[in-house]
Amino acid sequence: MSEGFLAAFSAFGIEIEYMIVDRTTLGVAPLSDRLLTAVAGELTNETQQGEISWSNELALHVIEIKTNGPKPRLDAVVGDFQSTVRRINSLLAQWNARLMPSGAHPWMNPDTDTHLWPHDDDAIYGLYDRIFGCQGHGWSNLQSMHINLPFKDDAEFGRLHAAIRIILPLLPALAASTPYLDGRDTGLVDARIDAYARNQRRVPSITGRIIPEPVRTHAQYQARILTPMYREIAPHDPQGILQFEWLNSHGAIARFDRQAIEIRLLDTQEHPGADLAVAALVVAVVERLYRGPDALLDAADALDTGVLAGILRECVERGEHARIDNEAYLRLLGIPDTACSAGAAWRTLEQLSRQRLTPHRDALDVILDEGSLASRLKRSVGPEADAAALRTTYRQLCECLEYGRMFHAVQSSAAT
Image (cartoon, rainbow, N blue to C red):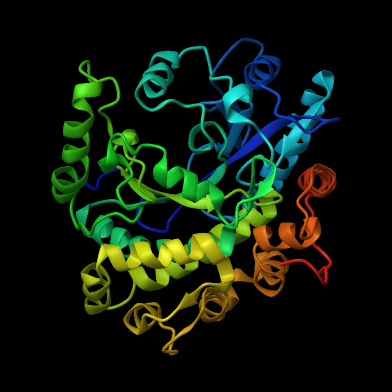
């Protein structure tokens, strides 16, 4: 079973999604098919451009860029991603458009602004639309960064799944970038995950409680996660068009077709260097847990999914300010406190792997010292999230993406 497959932590795959917006108004611009045609010379849903591939997503205003195959070092691809962003922006200029980062457009109206990809995979997208209705934020307005971690056999899969499952609840406290939807403050730091958790309520098993149930083998995964999901969607999908493992929408999903687990709970950051810094810290924590004693991973799998889902919800609502007071959970992570903020937990986790994170030091210091991108956006916009304040802040965010800069915000005395 393991022949030809990559060992855990020997390589990584990264996918980053961006919005295409009008350069003047910053409203969404459904141009991904034109962009892909311009770079490939013909209409396509994916094109390989050196070390980075470009591909479409469900909505026409979203473009995904990803590593062209697994890469052995995360820091080595930062420049490839950044140069790809610059190239895409130069191509989009002919339509007076550009890329915008973060996990959701802050004032998009999904009822009127959604244009689904009409080519190639349109049968799949059309069926999703008929079953769930893809005009909502949880479908057409969410951009994320995915980390793909390989495994070569069931033994590696079981340890990797246990390690990933235990860190998932804390991810919004590190990577949240979506405090605004519909032109207003949602009261959450990660409105993308909030919408994502509810977008398939008609078939609840697809998303579950976001945190997957504990499993250790391919057979267990099939029996406990995939088969119930296929069974539940079958009445809506009698031809079996959607009954493949990519239907799974938990916060981390196993892709046995490529022997990898894909982490999906990370909002897109302000520029690729920030995304890769977040990925490096998450991977470092997962690897430390993975290489821990069997008893630690057994204890991790024994922790109730509902407890983990509760911690996740706290982090979706409050980000780095969420209070983590489950001592057993903190002990599993190697944090000696009986209670602490999620931000303090991440600082401790970063210290445990600090030496290997040196290439990402500048970006991580901003995130851990100044707060998640969501918190920095809120400080920049201020207490009144009016159209002018949002447009000014998100224009600055677009500049950060263009030039590979971290986003900083001066604390407003009235801001929350």
